[in-house]
Length: 207
Image: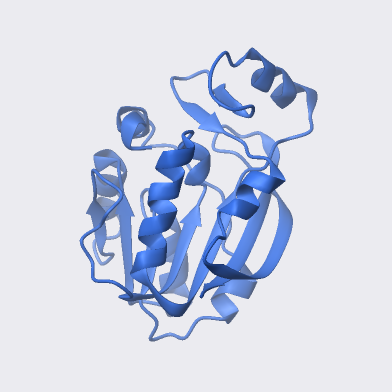
């Protein structure tokens, strides 16, 4: 995602769709400090605010996404970042969410850097919610995976200048190193390009 910030700046007007999890919001306290890593224009933080959660911070690599969020909802704490580290103390958040972010980061090491930073930022026992994209089973997506000439299987060009990744189950399970899994659930959603897709929700606690 850091290397594709220009694409996401150009995509700042798009509508994102990954839903919050009722299991995640039900496990939160209204006083919890919550991080939205890869917040885009703050859509999910606005949804949390509507549920009474106001102690929130959103960070994103796209300046234009953050600028849009600040215009549309000036009350949100949205910050632009240009590296995985966000400059907050260890254990300074009670919960974190990563919605459709790892799909935008195609390199294993870059994904690991984000997850390492989130583990650092969460207090022991803090809650992690991930919503992301597994490998899809339809012919359209399988053809896109096969067309990719570099990177792991599941990486493909979006057709409008972006490169994203869908993940194997084993790879996604590796994201939870250092966390105690709580639940994993497949969901149906619509992508930012308007296509039906399958997503996965993970809920875990930092050990």
